[in-house]
Image (cartoon, rainbow, N blue to C red; front, side, top):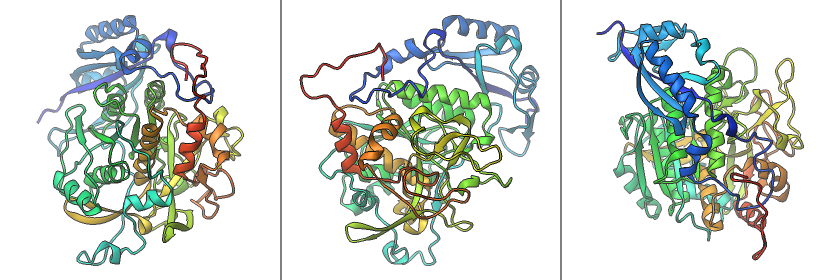
Length: 522
């Protein structure tokens, strides 16, 4: 086994200096739909790396004894390879090898430091740690007797279309012609599961395409408690609620390198052209290096520019987000101002209506919704009138509030699915991301155009118009539900029919000339 393995790393470069991209304060300022989004073919020219930057990094790498594997200027990445010891030395990083695995695993002990020659050009160095980088945000309900039907074993659970019906997803609207992207960092799905599951619901199985990123493929492990649960949950929730949408599942290695590559793959995919991306993986914001966050933020800006909404699970470990330091933390990427952060509720129903909905909090046994106030991102302008309270931590930083919307996530009232031929009930905010992604796709299909960056519209024009059912009971630890926006459930759970109505009302009347403000106004 090599003691100094050859590794590949990703250098993420800055966007072009003259088109660094709009800020959260600039995007979505004009409440008119449809927006003038960039087509994916133009994105590389507008937001890719400057050719001088790529040349400078490539020349530096060769002088430093590293090989340039490939450059992808449109996605702002340069892939390098070299001996691990040499790379660690160049970037002053400490990396430990796990000799018990083949190839040997790598654990990053100290973060890389950019050489002075790269400091103005390179945003992040990814790939020194072999992962796993981000866990899925799902919880499986333990069932005492697997021979009993799920309806009897978990009487409060739902088939996903039942949840959509309770949230009044528009029944006559269709996501036909739209694609939902699902990001997965491991595991896979079995076609037999999907065939059986959708047949049991009396729903035509959606078209599912597996997209390989950095060599990862659809590779089910056979263990529903592993990543297969996440992959199949995403497909079965999104596919049963928006069955006429196409599903593109982007499989990537569970590393910082793979995670970003999967996001970029969905954004730049000119074949599938997804209108919405669902991400159910993440980790505490405090554990993400500054440069890595910057690289992801540039990618999420790209998503907004091409009109792709990004829905991200807000976490399943309450306001502490799984850290034991006694402080409140939010999950990332849910904390990004460019994404729709998806919190969790407990949903109880009577026939055809919601009987009770509270903040999901079953700690310490079965988890609780994430949510809170970012320590990295300041309060966006579009959240300033939402009543976002300052952070519960000392200093009370006035940051980006999380989540934006919420949906059923309590495993006790979770989603009935079929994973690795085993009937199961899953909860977690993992389920809420594809739940809301399906609604975005349905609305896009009904409107005839993509919606894109939703947050400014939601906060400044839609939240006061009944597009969400307020959740006013419960707590996720440091934060409590209250009337209006709160750091447990955001504005509450969606009311799909009204959301579609209000989005449609933002469109100009027929024959109206819509003024434009430039090549990529949003």
